[in-house]
Amino acid sequence: MPPRVWTGAISFGLVSVPIAVLGATEDHSVRFRRIHTVDNGLVRNRYWCEIEDREVSYGEIGQGYEMAGGRIIPLTDEELRQLPLPTARAIELVGFLPAADVDPVRIGPGYYLRPQGSVAAKPYVLLRRALERSSKVAVARYAWHGRERLGLLRVRGDVIALHTLLWPDEIRDPAQVAPGPAHLEPGEIDEAMTLVEVMSRDSIEGPEFTDHYTQALRQVVEAKQEHRRLPEAPHPAARPGQPADLMAALQQSVNKARAARGEHGADVPDLPTPATKTTARKTAKKSPAQKKTSPRKPRHSV
Image (tube, rainbow, N blue to C red; front, side, top):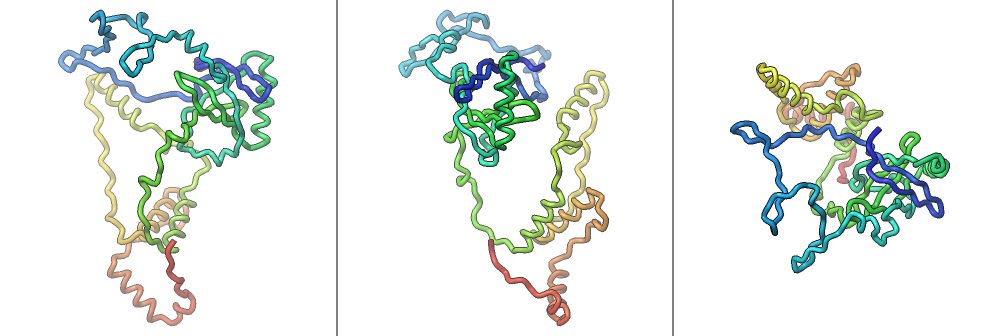
């Protein structure tokens, strides 16, 4: 059972659901320690009081708000818990909307909400089923870690999950990095859609979604611990030359994706050279039969 992150209640109109917030994810990132490279001694941070000019213990450290002139206003944990804020101890639901209307770039880490006690089970299940039947998510406000936050409640299995949401002013305008106009042929778009279809999956589970960095790092650490030779990095696979054009690259990608899925007739053909393509176009123009069966599509841009 993951540790509790926060306790409070879901405020749903006049309904209050006591809940505990539990972490829904795990961080498997590799952690490094800072060391003195001469003797491998650990390098630690020290807490230093500027007034007394001495090191202080963690238990002596509090928190304070710095005013414009440099004056520090101390604040205790109890004072912060008693903030005159409706969302200080409650996740207050403010509205519902379709999940597709929430920009994924705004969605942050996820947590599980667990009802506190048997009395909270009924309103908890009521809210969960209302979200399920409406096929919507709830938008909420709550206060955590020194600031009021925006959140999203959704159903995952039999549990209500909470995701933090960035405020609108925390999202940069994507127009700053948008590319300029580009001309695309209809056939190129069709081939790109074929590639999307061939590469479509039912889930993001499987060996392709494995943290290979952590695995490789553990191999190195184990080898050094046992004084063995370090494993060598694999040689990168030879990459084919740059395709002559975008359409050729798309066609080759489709063929390779089909071959990876074991589809029949998915052999990757040799990419035509520019000269070969030019000859093929001239030959096609000289064939009246081909003109009748394969009329050229009009060119247009998108």
